[in-house]
Length: 532
Image 1 (tube, rainbow, N blue to C red):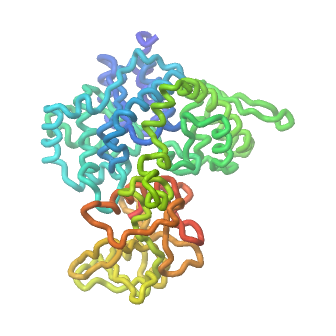
Image 2: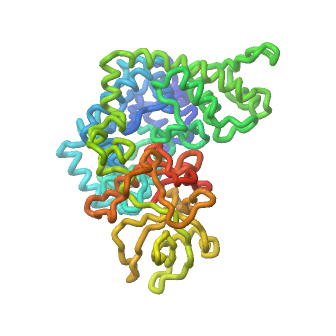
Image 3: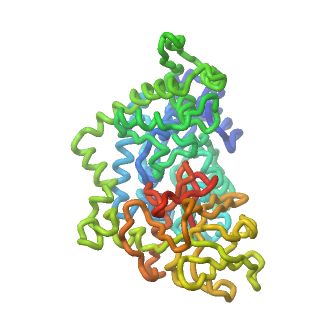
């Protein structure tokens, strides 16, 4: 079959449904001479979810086009990305990823014997690779490294050096895996352009980069392993699939940021070549579509009801998930799942007496979010820093006899007038720090999304909140915060790594909501943003 395909036919298979290709002329040249060598890497962090079917479908296309395909389980990257995968769990998560990715490929009919599976630490700890990391680090600026990882690496106010290394290592992987092209999501574009810029400086060839669109999650934002309400797990039961799809964002006639419709486009059609909308006979009965554009057009014109679309996707999705569920019914794989992703409420720290119980979630005391003293504050006044153009001094009432002085650059994003008398969130037990000669006695917490330009919004307490009210993580209501956080222990940095904004604009820590006694902490628009 592959031998009968022309270079143009192979190019069509390789590039169909991609959002962007960098280096297409180089790709065409390789296809004229031989089969393309391409790799897809995945950091072994959170559990893979149904959006992983999108790259799996492209891998199927690559194999149909005769490509030599390598799948990289990037365990070292998982650790470098703000410790999303603890060192002691790396090996177990690699094994889980290998089993679940293979199960996904088998469920869509991809022959595993044509694929090469590689673990990152099998070559990334070699002498040659390590020397190249040092060589690259002497060329890449901090600005370029941070910019490259902005949409992939967890962004925090004081980033670890590890996160800055991440993009460079991904660039080097192209050389050490000896491929012509790297495949990934369009969110990795800045890492790909960093590779194109710097690999030639090391004497290595510039590669082609193939980019998938980012598939919306069930809430309309990017589907994320760390955001429970946005995703369907590969091992979710049929009942869970029905429940999550029922809640999914699927507004009548709206084809933008529609995760249900996107699944049809990027998974169902590439695999099946058709899609059946199941309907009651009184509404026209079942209808089979042979092109996604027809489904999209009918949905936009409201000829297809969201309920019928969801019900039909539910059928298609369960057909894909059932073989994976069956495979993971074995005692060995159940044990692997539970050890690679232990239940936080059953971890070792959960049984350490009253102190652990007070934390409410069984987390390691070192990482318990209850140690952080976050309060509702009210901005009393805002004035310019006398020695820094970009900084302002905010006097904030946090429920103490005297207001605290906070030095921040928030006025660059929110007008001085809008900040006056505004209720905000304030981190109160950091060690005071001098900023251009003036002591900042707390930290103003905001939601942010990196990029050009950077977007920042203050976090909003529930309506009716008062200065000094405590903010807690759901399940940690009764634990007391530290009087002062020890900066050497980096407790705030570790807690902050798991703080983010959900697709519903709700502040969360590890999928648990940030709250006061009156309700949720939110922001206005920055879905999927970080909190710092």
